Image (cartoon, rainbow, N blue to C red; front, side):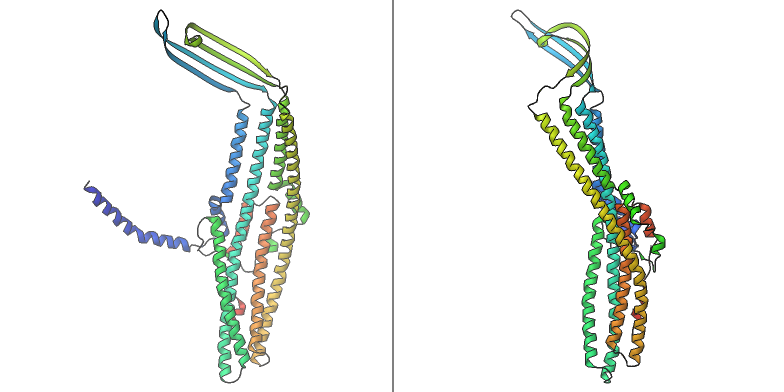
Length: 458
C-alpha cells in the first residue's frame, strides 16, 4: 500500500512532462492543411448518413440470409433424463428414465416461404442501392460544404482588400481636403463606404465560421485548419468532359441507384403479393425423426424402445375467413404504389440530371465570360486611376471601378465553384460518381495566397 502514493507521483510527473509535447503535437496537427480528398476520407468514417446507409444495407443482407434459412433443413435434438418416485397402494419405487430424439424437417413446397425469400432478396438490393444513393448524396454535399468555405473565405479576403484600398484612398482624400483640393462630399462618401465595408467584413467573417461548422457536422470534428484552394485559372473545360444531355440521361437510366432502389422495391412488392396469394396453396414438408426411450406414459417405466419415422406432411388450406384474399389484394395495391414511386423517382432523376447539366453549361459559360469581364474591369480601374491623376474623375469613381473589379473576381470564383459542384451533382444523379472524380477535383486544389489586382488601387 505504501507504494501507491509513490506510483501516483511518478504518473503525475510523467503526465506533466508529456503534456507540453502533446499540446504542441495537437497544435501542429490543427495547423496542418486539409484538402477535399482528406476530408472525404474522414467523412467515410464519421458522417452519420454514410454510416447509417451502410448499416441499413448490412441489415438487409442479414434479413435475406434469415429468409433463406427457412428454406433449408431444420434440425433439432432433444434429450430427457428423469428420476421418478412411484408410489402405489402396495409399493414405492424409484427408477430413472432416458429419452433421446433427433428430428429433421425440410420444406418441399411452400409458396409463402419461397416468395418471402424472394422479397428479402429484392429488399436487400433495394437497401444496397438506396445506401449507394445516400452515400453519393453525402459526397456531393461534402463538396458543396467545402466550396462554401472557400467562397466565404474569398468573400472575406475581397472585402478586406477593398477595405485596405478605401483606407488608402481616404488618407489621400483627407490630405487633399486639408489643402482644399478635394470636396467634403468625396471625403464623407469614402468614410461611409469604409464603414459599410467594416460591417461587411464582420458578416463575412461570421459566414466563414458558419460554413466551417457545416463541414464539422459531417466530419465529426472542428475544422480550424487551412483548406486548399482552387488554383488560379484552372482549365475546367479541358479537364472535365461535359458531353451532351443524352449521354448523361442514358447513364442515369442505366446506373442511377435511386431508380435501381425503386425498381427493387417494385420487385419486393411483387414477391409480397405472391407470398400473400401463396396462402391459398398447399404446403408439402418432409420430416425425419429418430427416438430412443425407456419412459412410458405418465413417466411410468417402460422397456427401452427405438423408433425411426419418415413422414410426408401435406397441408391444404380450405378457408381462412377471407383474410388471405384481403392480404393478397392489399399487397397488389402496395405493388401499384411502388410502381408509381418508381415512375416518380425516374422523373426526378431526369429533372436533376437536366438541371445539373444546364447549370454546368451555364457555369462554364460564366467562367469564360467572367474571365473577360475581369480583364475589362481591371482596364477600367486603371483608366479611372489615370483620369483621377489628371483631375477628370474623383476618388469615388476610382473606388467604384475597383469595386467592380472585386465583384468580377468574386463572380469568376463563384462560377468556377458552381461548375465543379454542378459537375459532381451531374455525376451523382447519373449514378457514376466515384472517388476518381473527387481526386480529379482535388488535383485543382493547392495551398496558395490569392493576390487581387484591384488591391493596388491608390
